[in-house]
Amino acid sequence: MKLVTAAQMRALEEQAAGEGRPPDVLMEEAGLGVAQEVWVNLGAAPGCRVAVLVGPGNNGGDGLVAARHLQDWGAQVEVVLLAERDEADPNLKQLVEREIVVRQAANDLTQLEEALSGAEAVVDAILGTGRARPLDGTFAHALDLVSKARAKPAGPKVFAVDVPSGVDADTGAVDPRALRADVTIVLGCSKFGLHTLPGAEFAGQIELIDLGLPAEAVEALPVELLNARWVRDRLPERPASANKGAFGRLLVVAGSRQYVGAARLAALGALRSGAGLVTVACPESALPIIAPGVTEATFLPLSDSGGAVTASAATEAVSALERYDALLLGPGLGQGASQTAFVRQLLTSLNEEGPPVLVDADGLNNLAKLPHWWERVAARCVLTPHPGEHSRLTRRPIGEIQANRLASAQKAAAEFKQVVVLKGAYSIIAAPDGRAGVNPYANAALASAGTGDVLAGAIAGLMAQGLAPFEAACCGAYGHAAAAQGLKPELGDTGMLASDLLPELPRTLRELRAV
Image 1 (cartoon, rainbow, N blue to C red):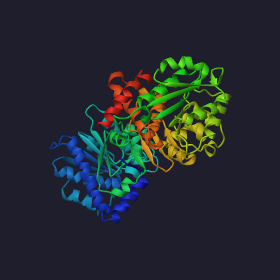
Image 2 (image 1 turned 180 degrees about the vertical axis):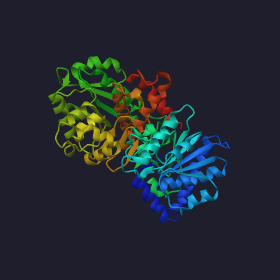
Image 3 (image 1 turned 45 degrees about the vertical axis):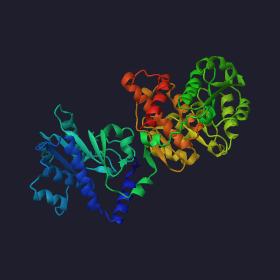
Image 4 (image 1 turned 90 degrees about the vertical axis):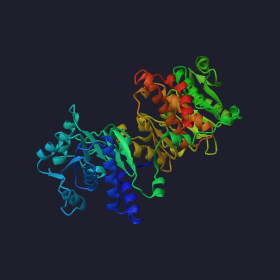
């Protein structure tokens, strides 16, 4: 499913108008769709009481159309105008003709209180995607009243039109007075702000209304909400006649005497994602500690000092890489001077024609110490930072990054000319050409040590099997999160270990292939 910004949605509507679907036609279809969703959700029960809250713009117009259809089907509808609307508005005139109760509450919120009393449903058609300033005055007080009504034991169910009032459609930022919806009925295309925090927590269940927007223009939109079918269509094939070489060879450069678990989890994540052969290149003195936990891998001992790789070991890793289809660099390396020099020498010696590289964890932290590193790294890379690592790579504050995660990931991908996976709830996968995938999952169980190492392994394993970096990152991130969701009924969101994901990954991939 494609995701849009408010500006992109306006452009689609303008294109639709140019192709013979003017705003009044789109509004009629939007209002009808909203009414259908509300009506079905309420059990199509004649006599159900619905309060439709109407704001000043097109979102309010959608609400007026919805009110008309709900009344025609047998609901008891009251419309509450929270802003002045032209009496010549054809949709408002149709309500008056039907003798639907229309309350003027712009200057008298007791009208709203009366409409809320006994209402089974509230349709929030107040602000939509156009809000650009903090809520105050009538809107703020009105939303407070609705929130209080919703919180009561027999309070109304809230249906938001397009976005809940007070939620930023582009960033997911929420106003302190924002309204929590039980269902958000999105029009034409879903808005990115509903699929990232904190906006996602206010959206409730999301239902999409097809407005017949220009299909080619929608398909060309760069941001995709990932789903099982999208991933299924891109997973590498698994022919019965294949051997391990057909499923790719991955070199995992990871680990130190202090961080042995990271190398194990990354290697096993790659194997569980289907890589045919995985070699762990680690400091020689750490190999006896790492190897017993990854019996299915082969090993390449690297020169070390004090349990960490030396700078000269970069030459050893580069020499070995010609035998592999992809490289995973970073988990558990450590951040001493020798590791920093190792990462710098390794990455700056690779070129675009070589195997793709996934850089994670200490690979990123050490890379961030190299000024203008993106001008010196020519290899095709997938970078997998959490917000702190993203901040170190970009020299931007974490707060700024989190305030607009999509824009942050896209800006970094374009600047670095690399694929960037901005980890966290609803992870963002951004490509240098502007494409982005949004992971639909947020799971607190993944907020534990080692889960990122498994993710790095899963993505790198898919790259070794031949997927392009962006597709591998999207499929790996989705499969990793879906595996965690699969464990949730059994383990909940507390105490899941990164190693719990490993046997779940192949089960998840099997289910994805069967979708």
